[in-house]
Length: 295
Ligand SMILES: NC(=O)c1ccc[n+]([C@@H]2O[C@H](COP(=O)([O-])OP(=O)(O)OC[C@H]3O[C@@H](n4cnc5c(N)ncnc54)[C@H](OP(=O)(O)O)[C@@H]3O)[C@@H](O)[C@H]2O)c1
Image (tube, rainbow, N blue to C red):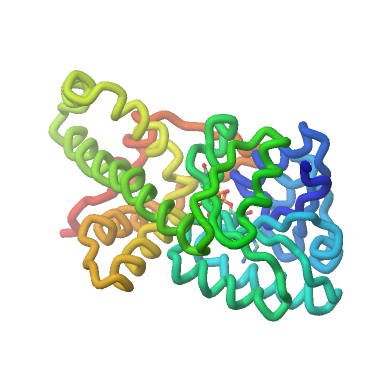
C-alpha cells in the first residue's frame, strides 16, 4: 500500500524532486526547515512540502527519508532518534538514502536502535532532475516495505536483507561517476590551456560516443554539488580502507572536487532545477585558476 505521508529531511535538490513526485501521486510531504538555509526553506515551499517541527514529523510520517549530505547522515539520525524517544513512537520506518559508507550506515542503524525504528539502508542512482529514470536501491530487514514507493512513481530495487548492501553498492557506483567527472575536468582544463578543447572533445566523442555528453552534464553541476560529491569519495576511501584496500583514484577525485567546492562559484536553485553547460563551466573553472600551479 502506498505511503500516505512521507517526511523528508531535507529538501535539497534530490529532496525537492522526491517531494514533487510524491505530491503528484497524492502523498503528503512533511519536512522540518528549522535551522536550514534560506534556499532549502524556499525549495520546501516551492515543492509544496509542509514544514512542521521534527517531533510532529516523526509522529505523523509513515516513512522518514534522510536525503541530506553524507557528512550529515549521523547527525540527522541522532535528531530523529531523540525526537522519536520524546514522542514515544517505536515503529517508525527510516530510510537513509545518502551515499554513505556501510560503516556510516551501520552507525545510523545503531543510533536509531534505542528508538526501535525500522532502519532501511538506501541509495539513489540517477539524477534528481530525471527522477523517473532513477532507481532507489534498498537493503535491510525492512527493505521490502520501501517497495510501497513504487505506487508513487519511484523505481525501487531490493538488494538484500542486510543493511550496508545498498551503501556499498552506491559507493562503488559513485566512484565511477565522480571519478569520470574529476578525470575529464582535469583533462579538459589541460586541453583549454593548450587551445585544443574542441578538437579533443570531437576526438573523445569519436572514441567513446556519449561519454563526454553524460559526464559533461554532471561536470556542469559541479559548482553546486562538488562539496557533497567530495564527501562521497571520502566515504569510498574509508570503505576500502575498512576492507584492507587502498583506494588511489578516489582520493585524487576527492581532492579535485574539494578544490572546485573551494571556488564557491555555484548558486543552488530554489526549484531544484539545474543550469549550466559543460563549456561555460570549464571556462569558469579556468578563469578561477582551478588546478593552476601557484608561483
Ligand atoms: N542531486 C542528485 O542528482 C543526486 C543523485 C543521486 C543521489 N543523491 C543523493 O541525495 C542526497 C542529497 O543530495 P542533493 O543533491 O539533494 O544535495 P543538496 O542539494 O546539497 O541538498 C542537501 C540538503 O541537505 C540539507 N542538510 C545539510 N546538512 C543537514 C543537516 N545536518 N540536517 C538536515 N539537513 C541538512 C541541506 O540543507 P541546507 O541548505 O540548510 O544546508 C540541503 O537541503 C545525497 O546524499 C546524494 O548522495 C543526489
